Amino acid sequence: MKQATRQIEIATRGKGLYEFTAEVERWVAGLGAAQGLLTVFCRHTSASLVIQENADPDVRADMGDFFERLVPADVRLYRHTAEGPDDMTSHIRSALTQTSLAIPVHGGSLALGTWQGAYLFEHRAAPHRRSVVLHLLYD
Image 1: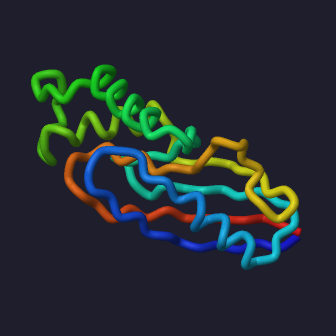
Image 2 (image 1 turned 30 degrees about the vertical axis):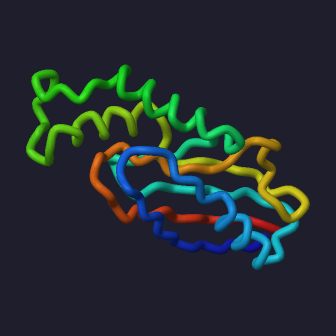
């Protein structure tokens, strides 16, 4: 059993879902991993990770709209507002999603479904550079 790690940076333009599947696929293929388990970890408390449909962009828009309704950006609702009106909402949205993913590697590729992709879910309105750590255990 071997293991490898890599840190990637994902530039965001504000709230939304940013797919990074292709970058991870290239890294896994470059290692020659036939089978294994990939852990993907987001190093932030105001962004998260999701596996979501990557065919229809309306899915990403609907996800963003849903979270806007679910966790409204109303500073009267929260104590933690020192970092801006969207900071506490970002922490809540991150807690409702995931900060890590486990993705099997099978036949040298991520074992994602036909329409699945790995996304960073940016919850802040301002652009950020987000750090994501990849850890692969493989044969």
